[in-house]
View (cartoon, one colour):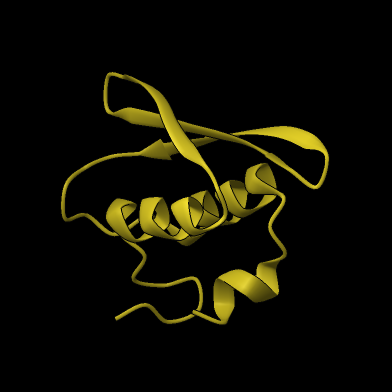
Length: 77
């Protein structure tokens, strides 16, 4: 269960980004890269992928900034 900035897993972030049109461009090591044109700008989001692990809230804040999707949309989930 996702709550605020806590308990987000990489799978949750990937599913959320796909709803906004982001797609996986490549993977390098344990990081997945998603990109999309959002609000007229190309956005590239880096997601650390460690199956089953929860993403650190500070890392999730960085992902939110990279995506350009308003924080309220992320917290509404």
